[in-house]
Length: 319
Picture (cartoon, rainbow, N blue to C red):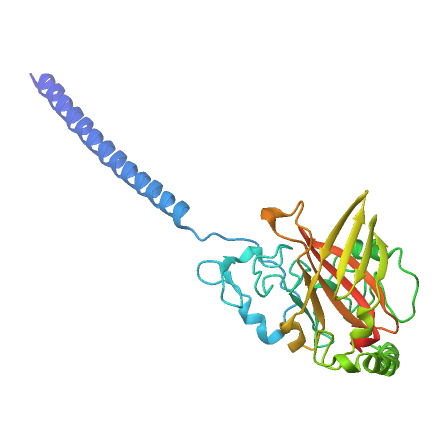
């Protein structure tokens, strides 16, 4: 009788333990499922709402007191300084001109014809057309950051002690001699400029400059063979490109870049060129950057964008 009672108690005890185990497992699995589901929901939300991070580009060519303007807004965008549009911040200095109004998204490249690069050591601006053109303008050569491209562009230039070409050396320290040579060249150029002013005395205040200094240059055509193309530059009249048996007028109607003149830089815009092969029926146009020099000459020519060209010329008229 007693063994039968013991067996019944063991059976009940086994049932109680089994039921408790099942309840425990059900509760554990339910909590695990809910927590796992919560994690999935949380991960899904984060995936759809996490900040879109991009590699921050190296912001070069910016004046220190404007550096704060080159930071992404809460949405990760950069606002063109002329307030015309916003672009993703990673597109700054990506060698494509998005801020076409002022070129402010490309301070460190030559993508925008109306842009400018700030030489930190020299504390001066240079036109963006001088970036990576092979000519050392900043004393540290910082604007020639693409040295391989710069070297290719000047390999056919004649040697000159007055013009430093890529590869650029840091001449900021101990550059007194170089600065003195540049100043001497500017002084000689300024004396030569007087001849240009005399020649243009009857054209003051016209398109040829406030003193008519560019009138003499307008009567000459400059030529240069660069990158398998022949260029004929007749400032204030027309610019012709000849290549592979084809001839295009890449600029006609002249006008001065007013913003550049505010920075004491002479940039002549030649518009209304041929439209064949240009996007959306636009016409070719060319920016001519005039630099102080002892002769009238073409230093460089390049196509900065489709049907948009940049020509750098030296002339005493710019001294």
